[in-house]
Structures are given as structure tokens and as C-alpha cells.
Image 1 (tube, protein in one colour):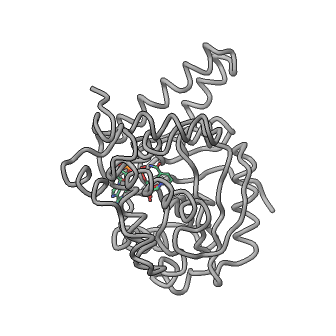
Image 2 (cartoon, rainbow, N blue to C red; image 1 turned 180 degrees about the horizontal axis):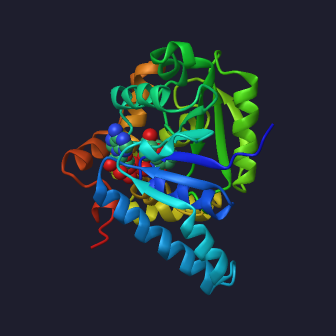
Length: 286
Ligand code: NAD
């Protein structure tokens, strides 16, 4: 199995920008693609900040930071990405959009390119079916936020994913300093099937007046040894992302009493309070 030298990361938001800098720091050349130039500019600024923080903390030398910077190119289309051995899609969590992007990936990249998605909840089988002839190259490569820090990559295989593509995904994850763990393609995979109902239940506890958000988070943090409480984590993930994942669990698994998103969560999303990224969610960050 040859080493991957060039990858493309499609989407330069929270996750895509984190995946790109993590790969660049591991010595991989990255083409960071986004349709929105402002998002590419934000990603570039985030990359510069991440690298300078690493230099300050003596985790890397200034020369190594410069080399990592030089490994990333920023593009509003796929034109410079043709040599990629790996394309990781990390665009907005919308099934129709992802299927369109996968169609472009099949048309753009070599017949050998691994077509990975960072989706939190959309069926890998369904994305694979949309690019029928290439479905054996479609795989879930689910990174966690913030990507440079979090160790796990949840590798999700559909029944059509080839063993070679799975092995190459595990190899790239390890090269990026991550620990890959494989799961099968079910709604929410493992991580969100277990995590999101807990977050949703924290909204129910708040809604029912069991305690205020600080107390709910404090109890779960200290009582369960979590690094942060579920409501604070929901703000970090994005309340819209949390609602959408609950909807996927609800539609995919049934049990409305178990998986329907809590009205409190839905109300905040509808008010535009999406968490850290909008400056307000459960908590006010202004
Ligand atoms: P985000 O909103 O921060 O970024 C999405 C980016 O996709 C935006 O920059 C947008 O301009 C870009 N985009 C939209 N259409 C595009 C297209 N056609 N081509 C290229 N780029 C396009 O979202 P995010 O939080 O980074 O999430 C991205 C993916 O990662 C989603 O599938 C999400 O479910 C998943 N995910 C998110 C988290 C999290 O904590 N936020 C964790 C794990 C996985």
C-alpha cells in the first residue's frame, strides 16, 4: 500500500479546516476546497493560528510550521486537486448536497481515489448508491471536533465498501496521528447514536425545570468525569447539527419518544442560536 501524498478536503468550515491542518502537520499535501472564498480565508487564518500556537508551545519548529503552511493550497473548485489519492468531503450536513459533491468527486478524481465523507449521520450506503459504479470507494471517515486534538476517527463501512479502501482509510487516519475504530453503517453510527440522545435528554431536563444549564453541565461533568457538560458540548458541535442528527435517528430508527429532538433544542435553532459559531446557543458567548 503506497503512502498518500496528496489529499483534497472539500469544505473549509469547522471540520474541513481542522482535517486539512492535521493532515498538513502530518506531512500530507492538502488541497482545501470550498465554494465560499470567505470560508477559505477563515480556514487559512485558523491554520496560521494553530501553527503559531504549536510553535509557541514548542510542539514544532518555525521551519516545520512554514513547511506545513506550504503544503496547503486553497481553491474554490477542484481544478488543482486531480492528483489526490484521497478526497474527504466535509461540507454542510445535507444529503442532497453531499450526493452532488460525490458526483463531482467521481468525475474529477482518479478511478483509484478513496471517496470519504465526514458526515455525522448520513447513510454511507445511500451516498454510495448515488455514485453506483464507485460505491466500493465510498467510506465514512468521521473526525471529531476539534480535529487537531481529538484522537478518534470512526471509520464507517457500507456493505459495498472494499477492504482495500477500508485499509487505506485506516492507514491515513493513523498517519494523521489518529486512532481509527471501525463501525457498520447504521443511523448515527456508534458515536452519535449514543451521544446525541444524551444531549437531547439534557435539553429535556432543562425544559422540564430539573435544573438550569450550568447545573446540568456541572453534574454531568463532575459526576461522569466528562471534560464538558452535554449542553456546552451541544453549543460546540452546533445546535443545528444536533437537531439534524436527532432527526436522522428519528427517521432511521423510529421510536419518536426516544429520538424526536427536544422542543427546547428546536426553538433555539429556529431562533438562529446555533452555539459557539453564532455567538449564542444554550450559553451566551458575546
Ligand atoms: P460548517 O458549516 O462549519 O462547514 C461546512 C462548509 O461546507 C462551509 O464552509 C460551506 O461553505 C462548505 N460547502 C457547502 N457546500 C459546498 C460545496 N458544494 N463544495 C464545497 N464546500 C461546500 O460545517 P462543519 O461543522 O464543518 O460540518 C461539516 C461536516 O462534518 C458535516 O457533515 C457534519 O455533520 C460533520 N461533522 C461535524 C462535526 C462538528 O462538531 N461540527 C463533528 C463531526 C462531523
